[in-house]
Image (tube, rainbow, N blue to C red; front, side, top):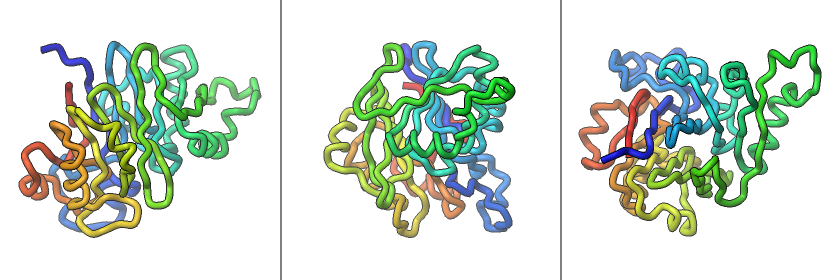
Amino acid sequence: MKKNLKVTFLGTGTSLGVPEIGCKCEVCTSPDMKNKRLRPSVLIEAKEISILIDTTPDLRIQALKYNVNKIDAVLYTHQHADHIFGLDDIRRFNYIQKRAIPCYGSENTIKALMNSFSYILKNDKRFEYFLPKVDFHTINNNFYIRDIEIIPVEVLHGGLSILGFRIGDFAYLTDCNKIPNGSRELLSGLNVLVLDALRKKPHIAHFNLSEAVSEARLIGAERTFFTHISHDLEHNTINKQLPENIKLAYDGLVVEL
């Protein structure tokens, strides 16, 4: 059967990444590469189109490590630093592709990007070569990147309303601790769900492991992969405890559907 969508996990860690600076815990000192997690992002490839979700501070490393040579569009989940602070690395893709790259997000996220990266909006020809070239687009409803439909899915990240995205039978929901009923209705019939699962202990703005398992079962995707994983979760130990169709993702994992 021909696969229509390829998803590469560029990073599956928290805002601190794993290993954490200065930490000597079992996971942070593990030699297992599946316990080494860059900040959370995926690359979606469909119909010769490459769509990046979030520009993490690790974007340059992720692109080199996983051979990302083309980005046709960027989808932003929200405005926190671990999801936007790699935007400047887009300029290398501008050079390769000879064009600006469209970036899509909520009104709050686009405002935050424009404030955080205000220097790229200045029309100063002296520094034009050194600036990333992007076109910001505020999204409120379903939209298309060429002929690929993007369905924004509102989720709650503590008190902040942020976006997940559904593309075909794939959905990506990071940084969330609640999915409103109306959003859950947009997630029926999924082949692959990617969902936030920070740690075992409760958290004010993220699903913990047991909450994520419960939510995954409610949504009922054929396969669920957890992301935004802290150093509290050792990859092999946790995966042995999880249901067969629900597993921790890891950096470099490729899923096709």
